[in-house]
Length: 157
Image (tube, rainbow, N blue to C red; front, side, top):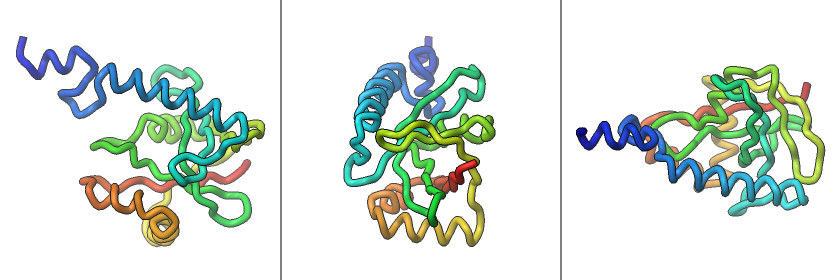
């Protein structure tokens, strides 16, 4: 078996996706972060965080992902699909596949249904500037990536 096929059979690393161990670790970290958010601790590494509820794009199973968010007006929030890799994170794919089933859970609160809008053009640029000023670390990650990170506005339904 070739090396690339071995890597592929152990979790898809040959195609640029994370390996099985990396996915397992991310699942554990996400579960721990979600518990902290539910207990009312809504910050992580200096950023506001919440739980994004989505439905798996292929499985149809409920998913809960901790994500950093940025205020956008009175009720809306902005999130960035950075994912740290060459592809969009799974939560973004799920969110766009089933936008009508999305909700957010702010620290210590019940889930709130939201409508996601992936921003483009001038709207994305304005939102990105606010995000980059609030959290320069995200702008640094973006500068090292070959893809443009999607920015999504979440508006309560």
